[in-house]
Image (cartoon, rainbow, N blue to C red):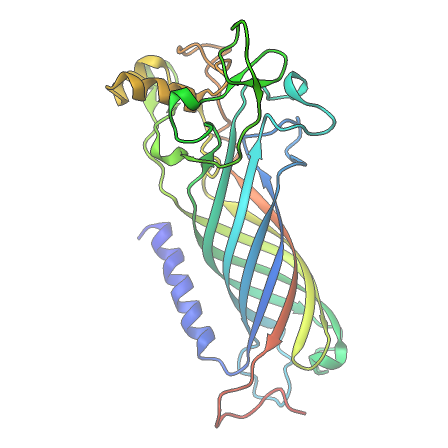
Length: 336
């Protein structure tokens, strides 16, 4: 049984258990993600211009408590999530722009909309474990879970349809223009922000060097994530609460941004794509600026990403949640 099958089975079992409970709470949260991966214009891991929006819907239960009030410290949650992560190495950041940016000459960019579901176990740190929650008002919690997420990273590489006549050209002065470097004239343009190029649809990276060189296979859009984090909640009323949370999502892949190892050589691209137009498109999508590789494996031109740095992200959010009325005919464990 694969790790993906195990994660799916856990999610299904958790969802079925949760829906069978009597005290169901629904929360909606929104906030921002922070991407950590191969792209970036800082030497450190945190890329400060990579924040993107996100949204979660949480189904929370306090297990069936035999007492007349909720005192259990453990909570089970299921979350439906949308996370947007991304980075653009040619956008200004930290007061720098153009060739002043650390990775401008690599010039990679991506945006990935991740849709997923996860199951979490939550430890609530109550100040008084035998006092009803709404009377305590304020408490902290910690969570750990597992989830399955679907996402296909895309890049903004063309002004319109993916065609070589619509590509961007990166000049030495840090500008993006509509004509190749060295042309007599060229109009300065900006990226259109449409992210039209599905990076998983192209073979643009290789693995290893020399006799151990291989062409990287197409990547699955399904990935396992391990969310963990902590938060605070405040009980506004018996049924409604508000809160803030910081979570970190670890993944078992280095391909959320479609950047992991080395550039393909031009010979390898020729093995994958017979048509000459497709070959030139693959060269450009792999190396948008043309400064990354000369089509060979060498000390200065073979590195595109870092396979030892898996792609992860953090999520800071605010939530509003509400306890739903129990089903008819059942005892109300939230009454006092």
